[in-house]
Image (cartoon, rainbow over all chains, first blue to last red; front, side):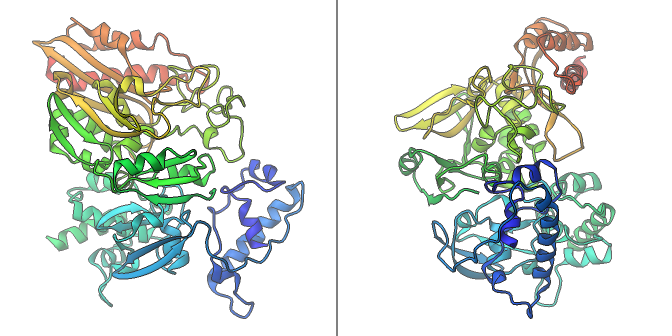
Length: 239
Length: 328
C-alpha cells in the first residue's frame, strides 16, 4: 500500500488514474522510496519514521482514492533482490568507509539516509531549491539531493553527524543553540553544514555578506536573525 | 527516475565511445540533469560521469582566456584572472543559483541547462513542444509571467535560464566542442538556438559531442564589463530580466558596445540593435534609453509578461549607467 501511494507523487511514471490526482495540485512530501528494512517492520516495532510514513501514506490515500479512475492497488511485497544496474561505491562518510552496492539512481542524500541510516541530513524540496540536504564533500558544501551517490567514491563526505568531536559540539552547532538559530529545526543540519563551509570560505565579513552567501539555505520558520547572529558568534570565536 | 547504467570515464577517448551510445548522457555537476531525471523529463539509458576528465583549467591563452568546461562555477567566480579580464563573467556567476549549486555545477553544464518553464517540468504532463514536440505550448495563454518576450515563436516562449551564457554571448565567447571527429568551435551567439518550429532543438551540440572549453577574447569591452540581474527576490532566484554589458568609451564617447539580455529571450539575447544605437554616442541616460528602445522594438508580450518589455529597457539603462560611471 505504502509503495503504491508514494508513486502517485511527483516522481516516476504515472500509474493509471493518477492524472487527476496530480492535476489537483495536492501538496505532498517529495518523492520517497521506502528502504528495504522498513518493509520488514512489524506492528510491534513501530519506529517513529515508520509511523510518520504510514500516516502520510494514509492521508495521501484518502486524498487519492476518490479522484482515481481506478483504485490504488496493493503493491506486491518487495522481494530482496540486487538493485537495478547494481553499481559498487565506497563512500567515506564522517571518517568511516562504507562499501555499498547501489542502484545508480540513488542520490547521495538517499544513500546517506536510507542506506547508512544517517538521517540528520534532511530531504526538503529534493530539487535543489531549499538547501536542507547540504553536506560537505572534501570541505565544500553541496546539495546532496542533486548528485548521485556513485559519483562520490573516495571523497571525504561530512554530514551533520560528523561535525562534533565526540561530545564536544562544533562551534557553529553550539552557536546555533545559543542564538536560537532555528525554530522547528528541519533546515538546521543544512544551515549548519552550510555555515561551516561559509566560515571556511571567508564569506562572513558582515551581515549582508552572510545573508547573500547563506541564501542557498531556506528557513521556512524565518529564524534568519538567529542564524546570522550564530554565524557571527562562531566567526568571532574563531579569530 | 528511469533506470540507467552508470560509467565513469577518465579520458576523452572513452568519453567519446561511451557518450556515442544512443540515449547516453554526460554528467558533470548533475544539478540540472539529476533534477530533470527525477521528474522523468530526462530519461537517459546510460549516464557517463566525466568529472575525471582533465578539463577544469582556467588559463590565459593567446588572445584571451580559456575556461575548461569542467571548471566549477564557484572556482571561475573566484578566479582573479577571470575577474580582471571579464568582470561580467564573474558577476553573472555570483548572481547564479546558490553557493552549494555553484560548487557542483560546471561551466559546460551551465550552458547546457534547460529551461525553467514550469510546463516543461510540469508533472501533470501538460502539453509542451520542448518536452513532447507537436503537443502544443501551455505557456502561451497560460501562466507566462516568467516567459520570454524576444525570440519567441507560436510553438515556444520559454526563456533560457543561464546568467553565464548571457555574459559569454555579450563578450563574443567561443565554445569548443569535441566530437568523434575532433574539435570544432562555435560562437556563443550561435550555440543556443531559437525555438522556431523546433523548440526541442536547443543548441548546436550534437549527440556524443562534449563541450571542452569556453574562450573569452581580449577586448576593452570585456575588461570594462558588468552583469546586472533583476529577480523576484534578492538572491537564489532566476532572472526576470538581466543585462551583460561591455563598453569601449573614449573621453565620454562610446566607440562600441557589447550587450546581451537575459531572462527575456528564448536564448541568451545578443542585443545588436542596442549596440548599434550606442556607437558614436555620448554616454548618457538618453542614449542608453534609446538603445533599449531600439532593441525592445521587436519584443512581444504574452499578457502576464508584458511588464518585461519596460523592465528590460530599465535594466539595460541601469547596467550601462553603472558601468559608464563618471563618463555619464
